[in-house]
Length: 147
Image (tube, rainbow, N blue to C red; front, side):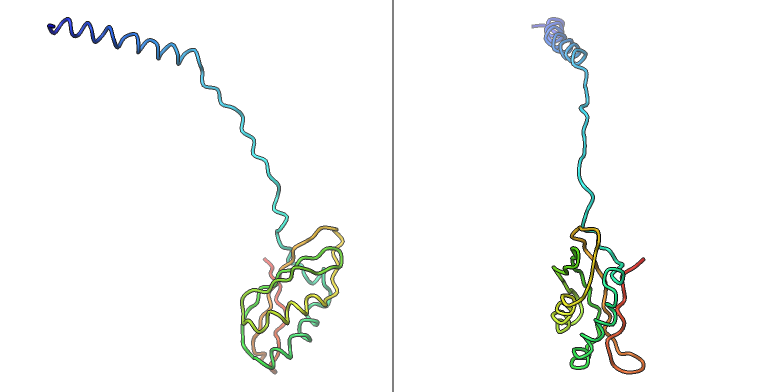
């Protein structure tokens, strides 16, 4: 087979494939289907206005935790989260800080008188700072998380 015959044969074989691909591409235009993203907002964004939901929380925490502070005197920062539905405090979690403070915090929170009129199972959060007070040893005032 000479060079000219080989070239003609190669062109004859490739040309129909090229034309078919072009026609197929032209006949089926690319259509993008609509994509919808659905979801719901995160209901677990913690409210930080704990003193509004639980009036007197600072004094109640100070009274409940002063004996624990007096016994252990370990400084630290404890993050507290709890759920409030109506006047029921539940799912109390205390994280960070010395371990000795966590159970007394949970117990004190369950005894607190709180109310939330939204009717939702609302998440609340705050921090408790344990440090020596300049005047006398004791639990430092509750420091609420806020921006």
